[in-house]
Length: 242
Image 1 (cartoon, rainbow, N blue to C red):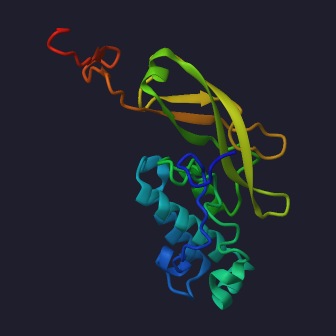
Image 2: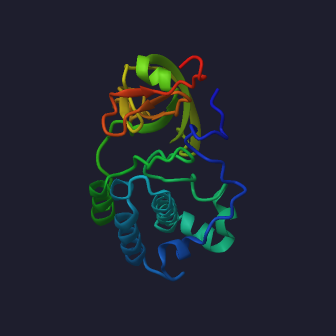
Image 3: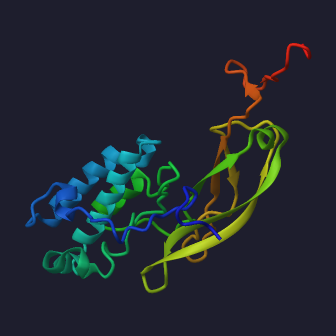
């Protein structure tokens, strides 16, 4: 089973973390109108969207906070609960928790593969979401030894992601899949595993699992920084052996 405390998991437990005030997150007053809330969210989503801030953990966090705040403050039922009771009034804090637009990835250094800016713009300014969609792509960071990367191997990985259940509440899905690692891979390469991402809307296919590789340093073998396909080996020898 996946270790929820390890970087490979997708969601951090947030129950013990004090959340920021949603109005503060969006930078609006408590009596802000719906249009003001939409405008503030769109500006933040555009600024911090993962597609334009790749590998920026701070931007990812701000994007997710803004998405969560907007989900609550734009809802006619959730907003009064929040105004009267704060986060405690939302049955777990935040109307479902996390990014309402897609699967987020805590701890692993990946940006969320949530709604595109086109999707966000359409939902905000036409008042409707796009039609049924395939599942979101999930991202997973896989650590390999140097020799595994050189020779290739097959790895079994366990991962988790969050989706909304039939009752609208978030639920955690655990899955295991195999990944064929070809010989000669290096840090930063990404492998696509088709159909192993998040579930799609009813009748729609799953997304893909995007596996980003990280290759550990080796005690003796080193890649040439100018030509990564060249490998140097350093073997200590005594004077007599030399």
